[in-house]
View 1 (cartoon, chains in turn blue, red):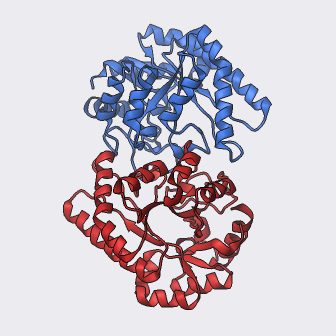
View 2 (cartoon, helix red, strand yellow; view 1 turned 120 degrees about the vertical axis):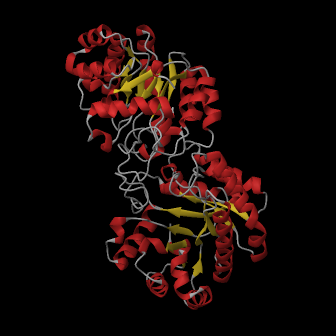
Length: 269
Length: 269
């Protein structure tokens, strides 16, 4: 697809701090960025928002809130406080969505962990509503259940959003995390207008570490144009984020990486 | 659980050839084994069956048939031939089930790959019926979709078995592959009497390579007694295989590994 809805997620070029990320997006004709919070915290949200606004860029998402699971109540309360700070930052940045990564399994108890997540989202939904910051539950690949997210399928994320019962809560579809699912097209259709974000990268093997083995679009096994068509048919018309956690890309010159991202976005998404 | 239904999968102690595996199981009071085909091919199935029978052991499964997916028709035909040989071997060994590992995704097309698998199983079901060898579709973890199996959930495996429509086809539940699934308890119940095998190991992180990062029961995040209870309640009363693909265990003395397996089976399954 053309670049008019392309967003550059900061982790794809993680050596860049926010001003460099902004300059890079502008230089390459990419109209949106998706910062992780570390590069916002560098400057503070107000100053960061100013830098982004001055460059005329959109913020497709802020990554991330969530991480509601913990063994003890104090840690779960601290997570709520952190989520409220994230909502404030997302508001300041005008982010289209605050991504929620929904915490690893605790105590050999996926079901109990999922209840913690429901409780956590329910506790911050009024804050999100007040700040007009949509919350996007992003299911992660099942290989990350013990490290990052006990929410592992789009169907599960949609059901959770429905259960919370406020339209400020939706889902984020990251192709890398959900493409393997036999029900993915059905679940994209079911999620419909709850889809608040769409992320692309590619599935390449071997997996060297769960987190940072992703590939550039076109290098792997995912039929991205097909998934893009499904997400579009479901009603999503927001930005499409390129979010590639990759030891291989991280070792390359970021400007060269963004040239590849740009090219692959046009040819393989 | 006690050892009366314990089976030692050969890959757990992969340096042992069949006669050593048999001696090891007997020495440790384990009443069943589950050989991979490499150690059967060493001796030939008839001789292997004799060695196992003479020791008074059961064969809980033969690993593996399947791998029906391929770009070209000739390779898919070769897979059918190989599956027929596997059925003969399983018959000779008196294996309770022939495990089907259902091939990686081909051509960025999971749906098309799944049709190849349906066609493949359908093509061998009469052979299985004639030899009285049950076929067990084993869903593998979604991180293996591009390497080993495009069947990634128990629900999908059960639906596929139902679609083939012969009771000689069922499913195999491997805790490592399916524990992450929000619907796992429902799907175990739904699979019911179609469950032809139950495998245990544990999910430990980090994942160092998709294939061989498994842990001993009790070392990871899976609530194995709970899953064992679910599988039992669903009607499965066959052997419980310890199948641990682990670079760490493979580097240890196999007799010491089996002592640990035995102990953990009693305390953590």
